[in-house]
Length: 141
Image: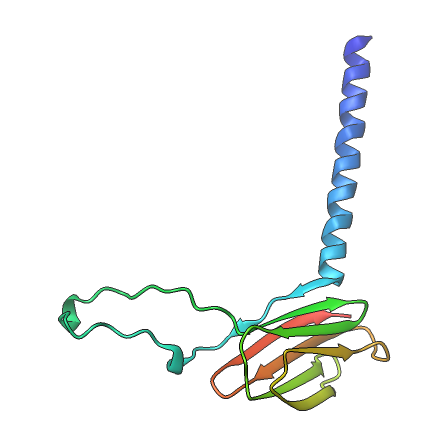
């Protein structure tokens, strides 16, 4: 009898945990960080020192910070910039319809809030372009 009660308790525990985990994944998919991908940037290249022969030089390593981060919360895209960028062009496109729903050029922004409450559900693409960097990310409304 104790063994059956233990097995039932264990089964209920696993059912509750699997439901909680799947709900957390759905929440994270709807609201949260938009992963921005930075394209190759030649101006931020870390070169080899002059005291090393080119054929014997190793690959330089350094941490290059991402200049911007984007988050989606309640159909509002928040973009925060880690660097002082003179001019930034931001475009948000509905990938389902191909329609550009937001396009604006900003001067020296620290943060942007893009309200998409009037837009339909679907897949969206955000593009952030500055003098030296081009970032893209996708999200769902």
